[in-house]
Amino acid sequence: MSEQSEHVPRMPDLAELAEPELPDMEKQILVAGVGNAWLGDDGFGGHVVNRLLEMGVPPGVQVQDFGSGGLDLAYEVMRGYHAMVLVDVSEQGGEPGDVYVLEPDPADIKPIQDGETISPHGMDPQSVLRFVKTVHGWPGKVIVVGCEPADVENVALELSEPVKAAVDRAAAVVLEELNKLQSDAAYDPS
Image 1 (cartoon, rainbow, N blue to C red):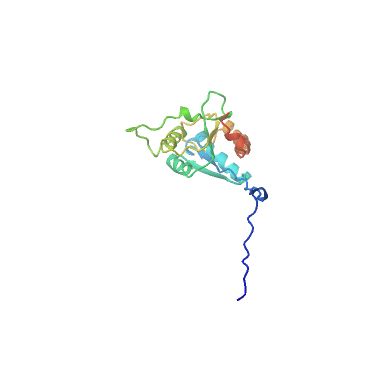
Image 2 (spheres, rainbow, N blue to C red; image 1 turned 45 degrees about the horizontal axis):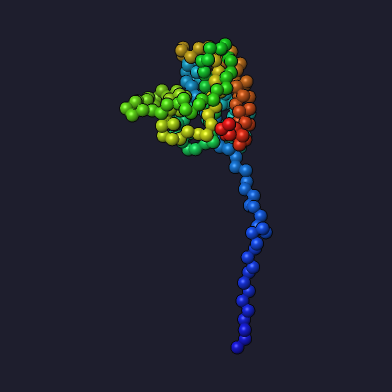
């Protein structure tokens, strides 16, 4: 009878094992244009979104015009994003066409209380954020790029001249914010 030798593989020493290289995960960011296109300047968010789609956005960025469909926006946010950039008119007391960058503090957004009703047809960005917080779908970071409107009360299909002139400027601001949001530093709580 012949002897067979069994070959037992040598286990590598822990020092020989290299750390696996993990690919950089691209941040998933939602850019949401909101507002009613039938109310003149209130359609600003949709115009900026259209401009961004023409310009192109970085990988991992989803750009969508939600119009006045706040409930659709809330459901989209709950899919899970590292960050969200809301683009809308924002009355801050400046001159029409002024562009603002605001970062809401999640602690200041109050969840919807038991018995409180909200209309799914009239969900403004504040209501969307309250709904998302209530269902624990808050993205890691929320930025609002807003524009001071001239008129959001009267039916009009066109933006006022100062707000129309702010569309390209606001799109550039959104792109700057996206560049920041793609880095880990943007999510550092300090």
